[in-house]
Image 1 (tube, rainbow, N blue to C red):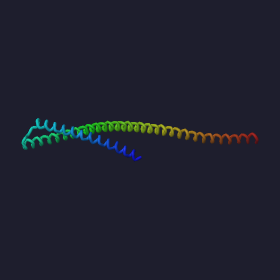
Image 2 (image 1 turned 30 degrees about the vertical axis):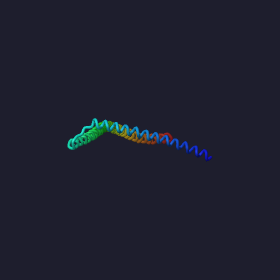
Image 3 (image 1 turned 120 degrees about the horizontal axis):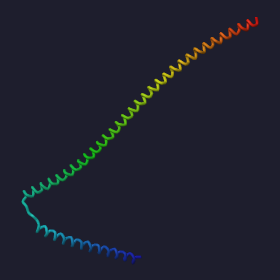
Image 4 (image 1 turned 135 degrees about the horizontal axis):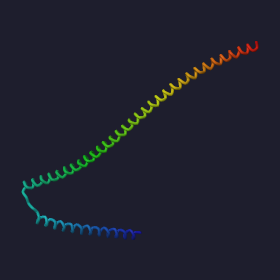
Amino acid sequence: MIFDNMEEEKQKSKGSDERWRGAISNLTEMSSNLDSLQKLLLRKAVFVDEDTFAKASLSSEQARTIKVLEQRVETLERELDAAIAAAAHARSDKRQAEAAQKAAELRAQEVTKELENTTKVFELHMEELRAKQQEISKRDEEIKLLEAIIQTLGRKESRSASG
């Protein structure tokens, strides 16, 4: 058991040593790359006075500001295009709704006229029915009168025949 633990410790130590060696190797390579980069920069570097540097910095800052403003303008243009499209869609929807409302109003007028005409026809039929009813009532009275006359005459005849 103790032997196993010692063996594990050796392997962990061995793995740790390999990692340190790899890290040192990477650092050495990075140092070499930095030296090469520094030499290259020194060969290609342009030295300017403070005034020129300040002007260049200002120009650079203005260029960044212009780029940000251009991006903002593009964003605003896209938003404007979207708003124009939405307004056009809303106008189209409004026109469709107005057309539907107009059609509904026309249909309501047609139905109203039809109802008025039906009412007039109904009133004419009612007047005709009342006239017929009055005529029937009048005839009923005439029939009752005739029946009464017939009964009266019938009684007189039966009296004269029996008497």
